[in-house]
Length: 320
Image (tube, rainbow, N blue to C red; front, side, top):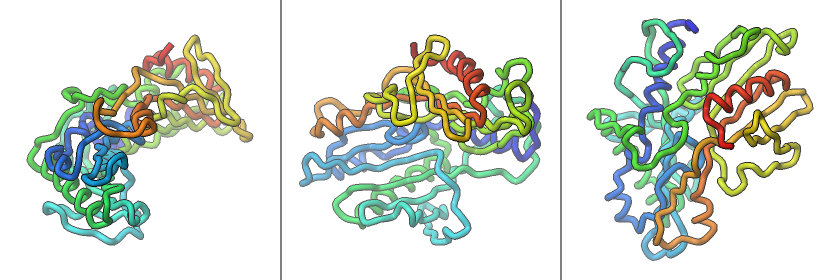
C-alpha cells in the first residue's frame, strides 16, 4: 500500500516508537531513593511503563512514575511550557492535580528505515513528532510529584539526545505485540475488500482505515484496530451489552451497538505481571499489577467486523 510522503513519515515515527522500551528510560536508582520499588511494567496501556514506589514513611500506599510513549500532542490551548534538560515540554493541566504532575514530552527519535511491511515512499516533508506523557503520581506532596516527573522527563530527554535509547527486544519486561503494528491487518484483507482511505498517525498501536466492498455498505466501513491492556483477571468476562464468543476457535468478547457497528476483543500472549515478589503491597495492588494484552477490532458494520476478526486473531496469535 502506497501512501503520501507526509503519511509515510508518520508511519515511520510509529515504527520507531515501537522499538523503544519505556521501562528502560527510567533512572531506577534515583526512584529508589524515594522508597522501595514494588512493581515495574505496563499499567494502563501497551505503550506505557510505571514504576510503583512505596514512599518512605507511608507503608502499603504506592506512588508511581509513568512514561507513556503514545501520548497525545499538545492542543492549541495548552500553552504553558517549561524547560527541562534543554527541551521545551508542555504542562498537561488536565492531568495535573494535587495528586499528580504531568508533562507532554516530544520524542525526538533518530531517523531510520521503516520496519513494518507497509510500502511507503521517501520522507520529503517536515517530520511529525510523537509526544510521550511523563507523570509523577501519589507521592506525599504535589512538589514531590513534580520533582519525580521532572527527573523522569530529564532521563527521557537525555537518553534520546545521547542516543542511549533502550530497545524493546532487549527488555527484561516482555509485553506481547509491542513489536507489532495493527496496520499489518491492511495487508491481509480478503478478496473483495479495497482500502478507500487510510488515517496515517504516529500512534504506535492504533490503525484506522476505511474499506469498500463485500458487506461494507453503500458508504464503506470504517475500521480501527488497536492493541490495548486489560485487567488479566477479567479480560474474558462480558460486561453489559457484551457476550463471550468463539472466533474460529479463539475466545473473544463481542459487542454490538445500536448503530449496527461491532467491537471484537481477544487476548494475545501471556499475562504480564509487573509486581516484584516480596515487596510490601496490598493484595489488590498485587492483583492490579497483572495485565493482559488484547487486540481490539472495531468496524462500523458488523459483518465486516466478524470477517476481519478471524483474520486478525490468526495474524496476531490470539490465545486459544
